[in-house]
Length: 177
Ligand SMILES: CC(C)(COP(=O)(O)OP(=O)(O)OC[C@H]1O[C@@H](n2cnc3c(N)ncnc32)[C@H](O)[C@@H]1OP(=O)(O)O)[C@@H](O)C(=O)NCCC(=O)NCCS
Image (cartoon, rainbow, N blue to C red; front, side):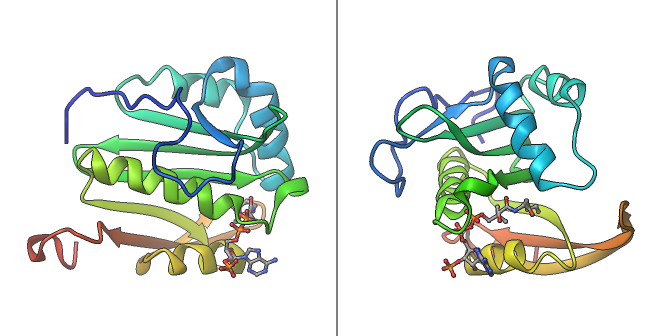
């Protein structure tokens, strides 16, 4: 990991495969109206503006990304924490108008590639046990179930699956987490 290095996502995505004209930008406070709209349309227990603000100010740990359509509209976002060599995906959501078009996959692949190149050896996240769409996406990108957190979620109460993904080119020393 290159300590303290902030990835420059102001330029169009260097990694692909984003559709032509789409771009990933670093999440900033100016994005929060649109991000909150996506968040509130996506989760029963959404983060508040203040929670996002605090996250953005957690410089050096928190990295958020917004995927914008060619017309500039925010279609999806992903928030992460990076601690040493671990990428923790805190949140991934696509606006309902844009779902099932490959954009959630494109944004997550972008974030995984970016942080693999910056030295993260593995990625992890929690997901509701019943969230089949998200689990399908994560499995297809190489995440496997590493454990369960009982009653982790509220509204409704539900277990979280802990998913884990090794960087594909990571050596055997990382196998098994
Ligand atoms: C989960 C989410 C981010 C997926 O984004 P998306 O842009 O709709 O998904 P994509 O079109 O990129 O599809 C990626 C994969 O998800 C799964 N998927 C997508 N839509 C699906 C559907 N309607 N039914 C079943 N699986 C589906 C498939 O595995 C798909 O891969 P495939 O196209 O190769 O079959 C999006 O549905 C969302 O925002 N959901 C609400 C918020 C949420 O649950 N976030 C995850 C929190 S852990």
